[in-house]
Image (cartoon, rainbow, N blue to C red):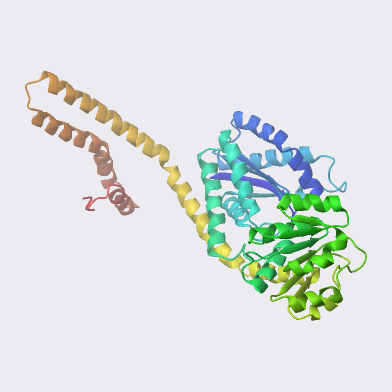
Length: 433
């Protein structure tokens, strides 16, 4: 196997370097396609995301050509990064990693499993591999080896996420808020939510709450038109900023994310509401400075969480994911050797094709002879079929028999092992019925 991966990622290179390669993906692809047509290698595939840029190449050239191929790819990437290094004494060696063969297989498996991601276990990378591989396969830039590698990587990515908890629990502010809300309410079906402000994080939190069954939405924003846009996008009702305190009694969840320089919701604003309410109230304050007075949490049934509380949840969940890494790596270790086994099996494919072609030639000649006899001789059909079977048996086994006899008269070194291999190949002594 001559598999080479050359790449940079968020751990090895700054965003300026990653961004430059990302912008040049099509040009690099064209250059590689030119080399492919010149038979410099057999297949290639580029994986380009915001956090990584990697080139996977499969070559059937001798191992001696490996160094040359490695240098070619290095020089190609360096050419596209010329003038973009931060310091004069920087060069591509400061950023680039290159892995060969089984190490390259392991690397792609780790990428697909999310172990090499900025956030361990994230799911987006798996979709990115699928989509980009599909594009290269459609253009015939990948063939049997990289096709199998990418399909196996996707399988491994799914397997790791199924057999471990590497992608479970919230690792973003918006998901952490939903996780806490579910801890309080259990099911979120039918719960109602109010949004104060129209920031991006508040919108993401709202979107995730809706995915878990939240229904009624009230949106209050100092700029009414911005509130209208958010309400329209998610099927909610926009209300004037001055009205929101009179409407808090209608909701179970409040997400506060304004740009106000002071708190906008206070204990006295909720006291009467809480006395009439029969269930809990969940307040998420993701503003900085805070929107909700801390005293609010002293009211019975009120659960107030700010950005620091959410980050504690995220940190705890990241630690839980980290604890799953060893399990994921065990799966990858096993699967990379399964791929190596597939590769070793592929080595004999040309030989198998040649054997089958030789056998097909013998079969066609003998069948042609038998058909001729059936139409032109006085022999019974039964006798012709007997002859066909006998002649096929002799011709198909002639060369293996000659080879076995030659093996039998060899010196003793390795002869026993070779004879055992022949027995295994021809399943001698095995009941095939």
